Amino acid sequence: MTGSMDPAGQGPGPHADDPGPGQAGARPAAPPPSSWGQAGVPPSVSVPPSSWSPPPVEAGPAAGIVYAGFGVRLVAYIIDGILLGIVGGILAAFVVGASFTTGSVGFGALGIVAIIDLILSAAYFIYTWTRMRASPGDRLLGLMVLNAADGAPLTTNQATLRWLLLAGPGALANLGTYGVGVGALISLLVLIWYVYLAWSTATDSRRQGFHDKYVGSVVVKATLM
Image (cartoon, rainbow, N blue to C red; front, side, top):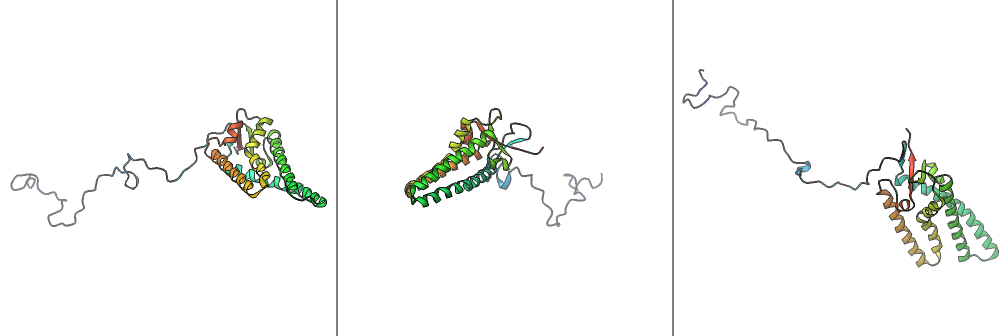
């Protein structure tokens, strides 16, 4: 018991490992763990996301099948546009060449070319969507355009309405070449329409744009199992 109490009997004496009065710079006690969130934000405050992201995509309608994203569908549509442009350019060359021989080159020939492009686009998409379940551009990228309800091919009515909403505005814009002001206005309206279709497709969990929801279609892509 010797040395356990100080001479005045007021308590236990200094411990052997306690710092003495002359030991400067003793290690301070560690602060209590912080309860704040990231970057000094209290946990009760929600931090908004740094950037917008589209909603998560729902599970595909069947095993090995997923809903096709906007990017791959845009590439497929560009491929279709190139193919249509090649065929339409050949037909246009015949029309313009014939008009040269008759001396009637002008708005009449351009109007005929625009009508040919319109009919060609309608026949191209409506036939391939109903008979092949996909346009050539879609097939190159492994996409299929199907009835959203049962996965069957689109009916002629569905395919026609889908073309009118998706490809029709672009084809109809070719008819607005009569007059700079009218043509520019039609092109602006068509651009706004396509921006809306792109937005509605990218922000939907099943990647159904307005045109798909309206006609009951869906675009899917097969995945490797």
